[in-house]
Length: 206
Image (cartoon, rainbow, N blue to C red; front, top):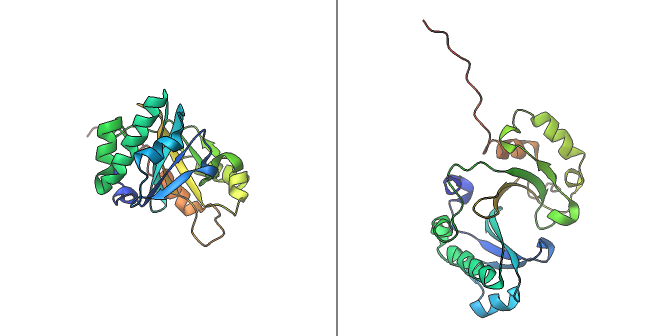
């Protein structure tokens, strides 16, 4: 379960909203100074799509909704309610919005630049639960990608889920203060969070 991972056991430190996937222009604020409902409604401006992310240090959890303006507003209010719950964030989020689901495998994963996912590009992993066995190939792809060459932004890997609504969690794969390059060790460790167990050899009957 996501909230059993050590990266997500604390209360959220900050959160942000973004419209149309424009994380470069995200509306961000610390968890201790959340916006009022009127400020939230003003930001949404009758939008029919919005995404939300809560940060736990350098790790983060996010979700997106597409719907009527009223549905988007209700979703956004519930996201802030979960942040106010502090260490009970995931319990409230699951109760109000139905995710994350225990044991749900990710649909795909992406390695990208935090808050610059779209502008820099990302490396997509179609079967993240199998990536450990093909790690050498994945690492080669990362090194030769725009993400792998970028030194301006911190890097993360996002594990994406599609049900009951689009949501994801991300963990850092670069080291602060070391040119922001993707760390092979951190990427391998992150992939291990969702890796399928290795099949055990069959035992011969005595």
